Image (cartoon, rainbow, N blue to C red; front, side, top):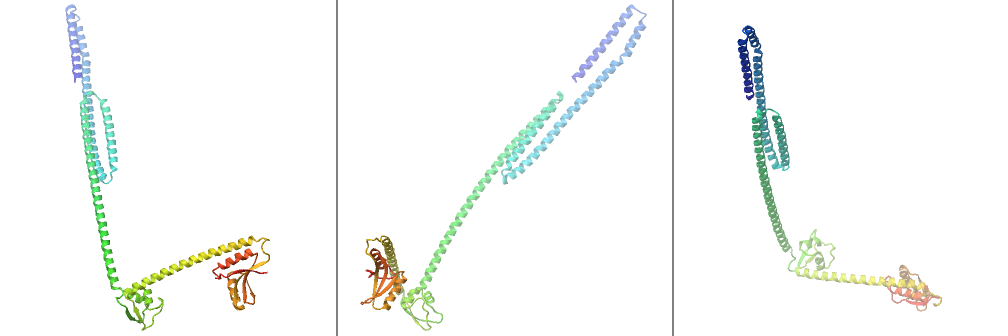
Length: 412
């Protein structure tokens, strides 16, 4: 608008100068040369006839200026339209981001990892918004100075929208944090309640088990009291299908005690009509004590026999070792000839043969020799008296032959 005024003012000054120049020329011509007035007039007419092109240039300049004003107005309107469209797109993006944030907030309740994705998406959208703003501002800066106000307004609106978006995001994060904290507290409370319920259930189960155990023990005690042996001995007549085991279970008496009270073996079969004595409680206790004492005596006897057998075996091994050593130590200085070990003197040959078989079964070499006093049973022979003495010690300690009267004699 200022440019148009200056152009019009310049055009007016040019026109005024032309008119003044024309007047001066005409005045000079009137004073000096009256004749050429026509020529001056013609010249003036010629100048007047040539003046329209200046007027044409002014009109053209006006049209050009008007066209430029229209173009400038169109550019400003286009910039305002673009700014308005950008604001609309920004509002749509904000609405879309808000909806997406709400959806992500709902999803975050079930899956906390979605919060990071939401923050990343929001940050990316902010970066895109900042990039678009920078691009728009760069585009607007290339326009004319008349669009600065619209650009500043759009930038201010965009900044306000960004601040509102940041506040909304902060509020959304606080809301999500509060929901997450409430959810954790609820989960902790539920876990505590479950643990308490489990502890109470376990305590109730243990109490029920104790009660059931006490009841079962009482029932067993009552059942045992019912099946206690009689207080005094009772006679019983055997019926068909009876046996010691059955009667022992029926009267709660040990089978061994029932058999011992009737002087029989626990495996004895009963006869129909046979009379048995059912021992009393005191008799059962006495019989059990006697059975325990007898078992203890048997155990002691068994241990004693095992000890004797072990001792005898050790003596036999020692005698065998001595015999081996004596046989190895025989020297030429020993008594010449062979020696035997007389183990018995039988009354007759039959008795001697019987004794010989027993010693032969134990692994000895046996011979018999008749004498005036009876038949000798001799084990051997051994080379040297030392070996014969060792053989005698072995025979006397051998439990298989069970003799202690063996003695050495000269064989030949």
